[in-house]
Length: 304
Image 1 (cartoon, rainbow, N blue to C red):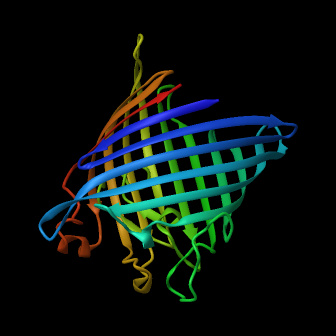
Image 2 (cartoon, rainbow, N blue to C red; image 1 turned 120 degrees about the vertical axis):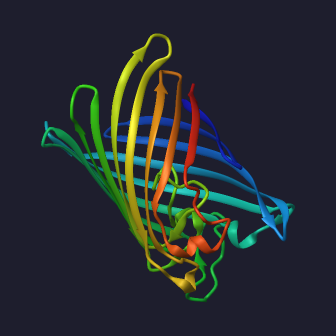
């Protein structure tokens, strides 16, 4: 069994996440189970008074992967997964029921990978279906309210290209579409380390959109007993469709970052400075949404 824990502090946001993972080969299939627990909190100002906003979540994921085809250059695999996710958000002692859903989802996808022009290319389309089982939140009959029974089509692709022995370029794209109004865990969120770097406490969310990430990584030196020291620069951009009736203002974000990371067999550490380059004008009108001129990310994780 593999397990990992992560503790991240981002300005006024504190997040703790614990992940446990089990993989079991069975014939031509790889079966996996993952359990994830997370808790985060931050203080937000309501009527000039700071209130504690807390988010808790637990998800259980079962996945089966089978190799459909492979040769010396490329491979294609099928994956089928089921996820049960429970989320609770609260302000003070008051639970936010509309933001605390339980979702049961079925995921079916293909994974394609191939060597290409001296690099490595991947393409991963996925269909997700929300199911009304295992205590999933019940839907109403209104068209534009959030649904636990939904369809979502998403796709990701990446290309990794070594430039020298110590420098490589990585580009990746992700996009999703759903005819339904989704809960937050299924929506696309732009802004932060894992989508558009250069933003931190501000993001855009919606049901339809995508992003494009680009980074160059330079392996500077291998430090004895400490690990590998690397420098990474990035330029990312993304877009979300405006849907006013579904609480999505939409817009475009672009950001850049520069960071150092130190990685070894038992831990990973990174420190990054980012800067917003472009964002919707409406973010300027609300002080708590206006992006900072510069942002800092720091993260540490341990593998056991």
